[in-house]
Image (cartoon, rainbow, N blue to C red; front, side, top):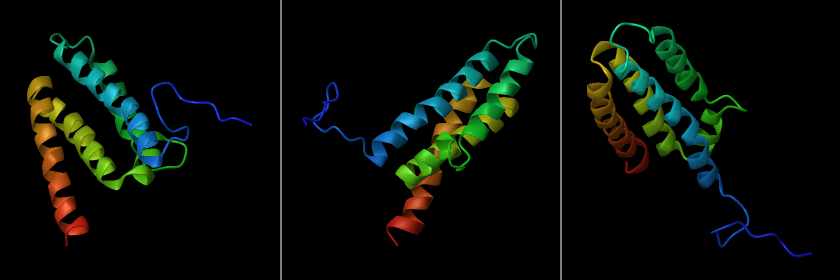
Length: 124
C-alpha cells in the first residue's frame, strides 16, 4: 500500500517539532487578538474581550495533555520557553503599558528568557 503525500512536504509523517510549531499558532493568534483589542480599547468597550483573550492565551499554554502547551513543550522545550515567556509578558505588559510597548518588550523579554534557558540548560 502506497503512503499518501502531504502537499508541499517531502515526508508524510509530522515530527514533534513541526506539530509544536503548528500548535503554537493558536496561543500566538489569541495573544495578537488580545493586543489588537487592547489597542482599540480607548473607551473601555473591549475590556471583557481583552480579559477573555488573556486568560485563553495563558490557559492554552499550560503543559497539560490535550492542550497546545503540552504539544509545544514535548515538541521543543526552547520553543515552549520562548512562547510562554512571550505570552505571559505580553499579557502582563498589555495591562501596564499598552498594546504596542507590550508587544515590543514582550519579544525582548522572550528573547532574554530564551537566552537564559539556553545558557543554563543547553550550553552548560
